[in-house]
Image (cartoon, rainbow over all chains, first blue to last red; front, side, top):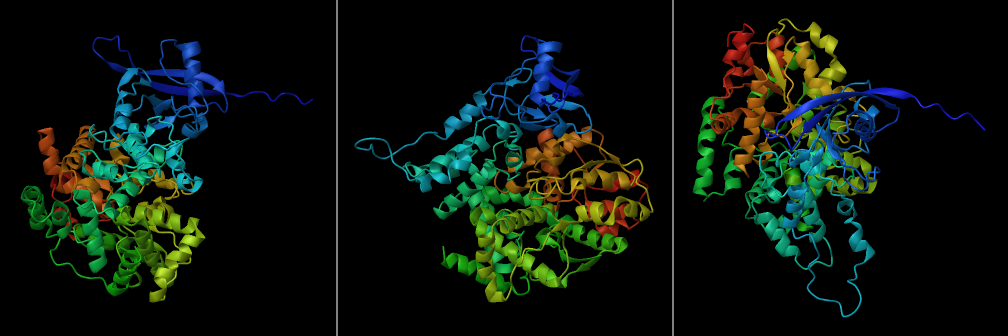
Length: 327
Length: 296
């Protein structure tokens, strides 16, 4: 029998954001911890070590410790992560201080524990259940394997809230439905058993805080610990609304205007894009462009109203035509 | 060092100062820009066309890559959004041979084929990876000492990190800070530097877009920045042109000049501000220029 490998300890410096709901002033503060822990440990191991041996007042939430339950979402060095899935060496390769905060865009209950009310209120907005148009005479609703397979990406979501935490839109607008709920919506829009596909798309298109409010910043794609890529699902919802002829939203007009100008000239027509996004007869919308637009024209002499075509543009136009014919 | 030059729509449209400063700086850096090979290249779709038809977007990018491949030159861009959209398209095209074959069918009529050898590169990455910080330092004639600069990467040049090959190229994650330090200025770090500037929703939800401008510019200013520097012309457009609106939401003037990456290099290389159209910004660069003793 070989000798058991000796476990090596490493030194970890943590800086943790604290909040005590019992504090009448609602102050937050930073607390530093220095601990020795086994090499190969995760950030969660380190936090549990702190709670067990250094400071029993530190509040944190975890359960499965195997990135399945989605309980331990926190910000580590500025980005949301499941701390059970995050090894210390990944975020502190040379022993740098590790900064741990509660997830953003959620209310904080205590220290690193957040309230999930905001998260589930967003999920509820998209009616996250199948709405079939009939009840099968006997047995369950049948769907083929093939028709369900492409839903797997979205169904991998464990509702940890990491995408909501780091969503740049939610930071300025708490009315945005958010990446997790829109992914949930995508899952039902594409479920063959659901009968409300068109209504769902219309709501997501029309609603304030709907699909067109996403900035495509990809923060949710980057932080999702399960590869769900919420923003890609939002982009697919946009494509579906456009394919279904829903072209009234500013975002839809914006996408159609870009499509039109690249087809025409090979590049974006920066002069017409803002106007076409608002709509030529939208007086209030056009008026909102007036002052910044004039400032640009006077100061920079740009963008020019004359929109030249690229050389060989007919080749690009042909590609557009082929796609339109083979739709 | 010669590149097939892909300037993108905005540097030839709403941000001519980016185009002019790039030309001036590349001359000093010894970078030869070949305009001819990409002159019939189309817009990348900017992520917007992709909302309507992802495959059409990938086809246009494959066509652009085929043009670059034909020239035998590496592909250079000066727009973060172009970089991001191209890198994402390239990742999809290279991951699936069948998909690439289908897309090449669309290019056949023009006699083009994308073989999969292009690796598009932003000027920011060329500076830290190909030119190198040491060479860059040797070209500096005026150290920008005393100038405090907030880096602003935006989204498309940092995410998704897999398509942008951050793991293979570790210098990319700190490139802007390295350059700011190389020209002798001081980095002002702030949490918004890799967040969205708001530009993609400017025409869709102006209130949110302007609030993003207000948050980023006022935070950087409060941290002590004299100006902000960005490798993305779209970030520049929103952060500069809509800063007066952002100031109104904060009820105080923010007045933080937003400069393009080549303009920063140009100032350190002794290029006249006017040649780089530093006088054409919406937020005046005068105070920043006098801080480093350059007359605007």
